Amino acid sequence: MAGNWISIIWIIGSLILALSALRSHQINARKGVTWVLIWIAIFFVVAAFFNAID
Image (cartoon, rainbow, N blue to C red; front, side, top):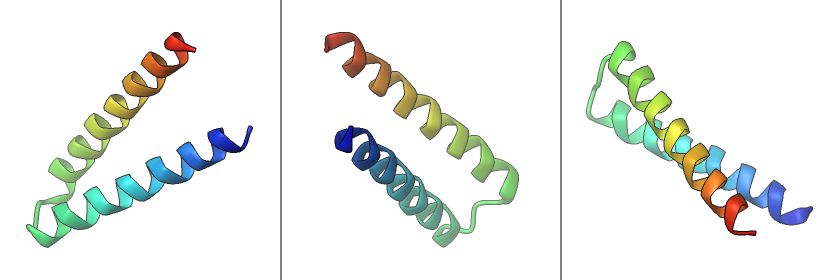
């Protein structure tokens, strides 16, 4: 149970880090949203993979 919360916190922190990196390169909002959605999709695929292993 605790591992799930740690994973969620890690995902949110990684997304914040990715967003701040995009903003530092002055990416416009539309492209930023696209990148965020791509990152979310990657995290869900990785999470599904690890859940399939367990």
